[in-house]
Amino acid sequence: MHTIVYQALTPRDMEQVCTVYRANGWSNYLGDTARLARAFAQSLYVMGAFHDGKLVGFVRCVGDGEYILYVQDLIVLPAYHRRGIGTALMHRTFARYPDVRQLVLVTDENDPVSNGFYTALGMSRDCNGYPVTHYFRVFAS
Image 1 (cartoon, rainbow, N blue to C red):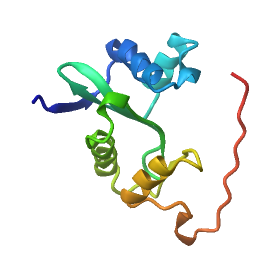
Image 2: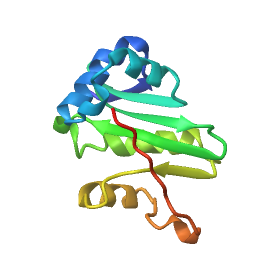
Image 3: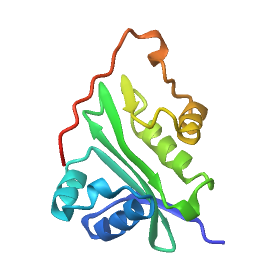
C-alpha cells in the first residue's frame, strides 16, 4: 500500500483541487477558476494530501497566523474518507500555528459526522466560555 504524502499545494495543482471540490459536491468554488487560483495564492496556509501523485484532500486557511486562523476548507475525496487524512491535515495545521489565539471554522450545525470529527480533534462548539456571537453576511455568488 502506498502512503499519503503531505506537501504544499502549487498553482499546478488547481485542476486537482477542482476535482476534489466537485467529488464532494462543493460547486460554489467552481464557477471562476481564475478567482479560485487567486484565493489559493492569497491563503495563509494550504497543505495537500497526495496518494501516488493524486490530490486526495487538502486544508486551506486564511488569517494572520498570530491571533486568528480560519480554516476555510478541509476536504477529502469521498473514496479516502475515514483513513485519517483529514485528521493528519488538521494536526499539521495545529503544529504550524501552535500559538495562534483563535482557530476558527464553520461547519453545518446538523452534520453529526463533521461535528464529531472536530470535537474529536479537541475543538469546542461553545468557544470555551468566551462571550462571543458569530455574525455572517453571505454575498450572492
